[in-house]
Image (tube, rainbow, N blue to C red; front, side, top):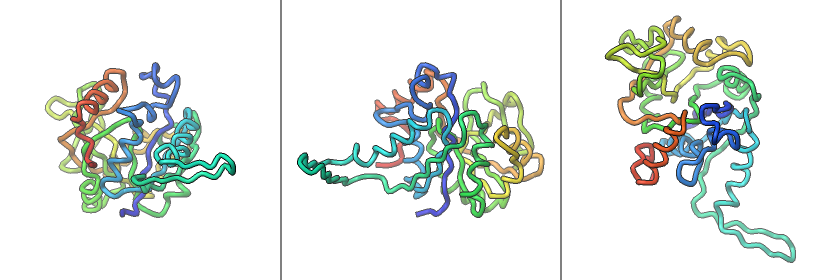
Length: 259
């Protein structure tokens, strides 16, 4: 099992998916009968990354309750009503270690990572968002990161052109654009690898991971990209949610790497 921890940013308000996020945080919106957060974790666990730091914010109690109840809900239970004794029989429960860390309701993405510094300040770690799935090979991503020897590696993907873009100089990221360049169209798809020196770029709760960290790291020549040409999809809108649900329901979900 990999000893490298995975940070999942799960504290945003998800306002573009308001019909869902008025009730629950976006990472807890279901794809099939499990939240998208679980799907992301299953992907990492398939590659043997099984320790997670989930940066909580908006409705973080909802995520805490899900994992507190996970073992009994997914087990067979025998109850002695006379004594209240309970026995759980769980045959196939995930062997994950999950740290649920409150990082503030209004904290920005970089600030959430900064609040995890005491847990992550001595080793390489992974970072991703709690609302996107992919079939990226995170072990190959990590190998690329180690080969390049830079502070941050971002997984570059090619979604529709409504996102800002990454511009490359070979395998290095030179700068960001507000709109993808014609013929390029690569964006930050999450699934990043970071070294603890990134904490020097973050100053407080208002730090934005994408602007205050990634753009500055790119200017310093310390941001490399792992290009992923296959499946990636975020869940920003109802349309995105329905796309992912339809893929899952048809048993055609490309991110389902596990059996």
